[in-house]
Length: 477
Image (cartoon, rainbow, N blue to C red; front, side, top):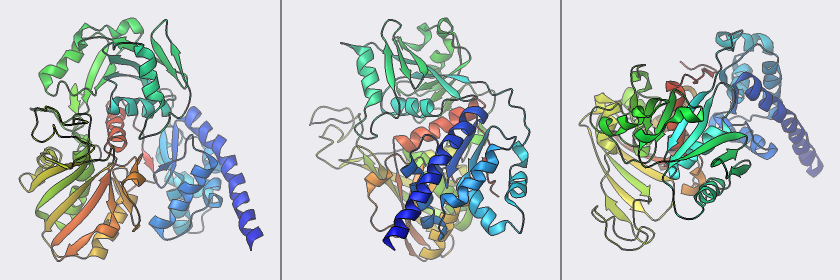
């Protein structure tokens, strides 16, 4: 028995090793992004690949092995398919359940018919500039560098104010090492003479400037760029419009809630409202992104009469390490030592993405002494009675097979805690074990990586406005 278990493991390791170069080739040459039940498999190790397969048993109540997905991957590599997100795990399970006697190739030909034989000539890169290089800025850089390839977002420059000391070295070091998210996946070198960072072959110019309008990006070969402002200094159209005065820019995306008439976009919910004429957009807040998808699907299925959102949020750089003056109420008290009650606009901001919920939600927030991963507690009064089982099964299904599958994740473990969700790419993760239902009253507990999960939402908006967002297979709905 022991020998059989070990041999089975070694066999699966060997198959996973064979899959890795095929996954990489599909991505680099054909712009095919592969995953297993939403878990990315590009640039992943053998163990990470096997763990992604093992995860499926929590979602589908059936095992998934590399024995199932490797044939799908092999067949995909021989097809005339480009520019697509392909979930190998979901396709393998769908073939198992719905193959109906067809061979695998015939099944894939039908499933991927929309992208077979399409012209790859327009797979050009789109220039992106990061204005600011704080917590979100560095994560955006990591994501774009990891996803760099033909027909993708290409991080061309980072704009910061020059700091004291060896600024370039310090910026590179902060990108290389992160106390929460770990070390950078790849190699970093510094071109000191030209003030640039080279990350996994991506040449990123560091531009030192004090205001947006003074920059000429074209002198660095940057044109029609999307500027992602992650400083939060300007949040209205007038302030952000300064970026458009710089030569070489085309559009601006703010990584904070926008003020005034700015469109606040929660990807997966109202990104269809983005028009070609929109020059300035907001990606709303991390909390708004976490709760809006869950609120939408709950309202669609059960109807929301009213509710309250309580956010248990990790402390941020805005707070003080030790007691000191702060313009905000209570935020002057030591963040690592206290739970701090503060306000949040997330509940009211939901209405900008979901107008049907306007005036139905209240909200508050508690900052807690953890550096990352937050939780939103949704206390909802529904328009019809339900049960724990019905709510959890519905949300599980939405996380797997709906238009918001990249926004909603679902976990059903009595042992998970906040650190288990560091690096989760979804906007929010429903904790099924914590769900409480009493007739029409429901409490939902939604975890979210308020740094990384939000950054992935920002990148999804950036991909759409830059025209490099590709269809996902298998299709939903």
